[in-house]
Image 1: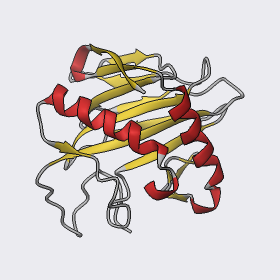
Image 2: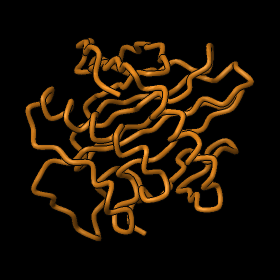
Image 3: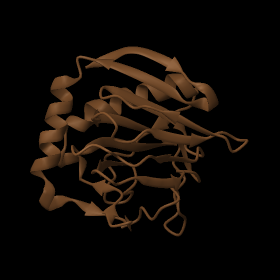
Image 4: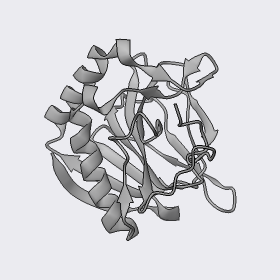
Amino acid sequence: MNLASQESLPHGLHLLELENYETTFAQALRELEATKGEWTFSHKIKGRWENTYVPIRSVPATKEILNLATNAANRTFGKRLVCCQGLENFIKDAFWFNIMGKGESTGWHNHNAKAHVSGVCYLDVPPDSGRFKYRDPEGNVHLHTPQTGTILLFPSSLNHAVETSQNEQPRISLAFNFCTLPLQLDPHDDPFAGNPFL
């Protein structure tokens, strides 16, 4: 798997097109399915668990994806960024999977606070399974149609959501947060506008 091309989109978004990703993605999806007994969740909205957490040791194929995204984010944003994928016992929101079925959506949110860059890798995105929505600083809503085999990088402060899926097949993506080094984490703080501490 490698980076085929990269495109800068308005409002600080960057689209990475991958090539030769099929084997890695298929392995990551098999590992995800095989580890259902290890899945943990942080919050349920409208009857759906928003984020699905799996230890990195149980889904090793994701390391290749996260490493590629980290390298691209470092080059693109000019920062020393890290995905704390090996610290799942301390930081829960380093990476997670999103599994969305027909009629489900993701509400407006951001990954602000101490995360600097966030992103999503589209592992299996059927047609009409929900466009990525985001707001620019003036409050205007923009739409991006995701495709399997791409990664979207964006500032963690970007307010974003996902439209309702109209497809019977699940929409599966891998989301992640990048922090700047050195890490400055406080157990009483909330670095990703969620509740990452176990």
